[in-house]
Image 1 (spheres, rainbow, N blue to C red):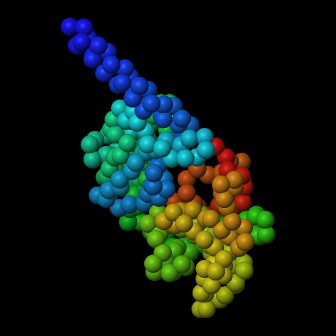
Image 2 (cartoon, rainbow, N blue to C red):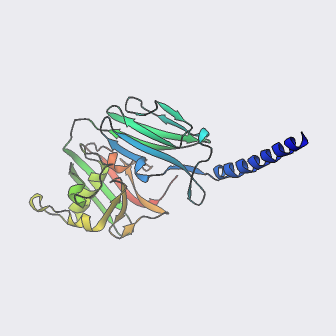
Image 3 (cartoon, rainbow, N blue to C red):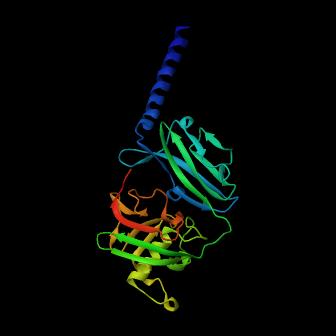
Length: 264
């Protein structure tokens, strides 16, 4: 009997040490993130899916797996637009599959230990806007500074960066803040006529990543882990949280881009 008790005690101690070691990793998590950076913005048609995985971020910005997966919960802000293959809420998983069920917008959120991270989901309908009038685009970086007011047409980012460019996270039926920036840059620094428009300045001087949703470089002004190209709308004091590639332009909008320190 003593032998059995001793073996049981040893087993409990071993399991206890293992669990403490495992959950210690979760204690290092300061923030949550999505494993695939392109999942922060998702543009889809009805009936399409997107698989997402949530990770922890340490104070040194290192991605780590969440060990206590039972503590993870996923929710949707708009079940008429996007849900999970398992339903409206999912718990106990670090990876889920989202399915789009209707036109509109939704936020998919992952929650863990009082922290959360979200993805912006956009499902476009059939209505198309080909031109937005009187848009004012401003930009201020280390070397790039300009102020331009212009109508912004709808165009494909593939026509700018080439047929192989991944523009999955850009609206296809409405001009966005991203469209406004690129169009105003080309108009400012290489003002071709409509007949000779070639996008050569933008193609040579601008870098856009994350499936068309993120500006990393304009001219010689490149973002890094301390600062990046961010935008404000209509003199708002705060930078927009949604990607510029899904912000739908309205007539008279002022879109202000700045190479500025990242804000939490």
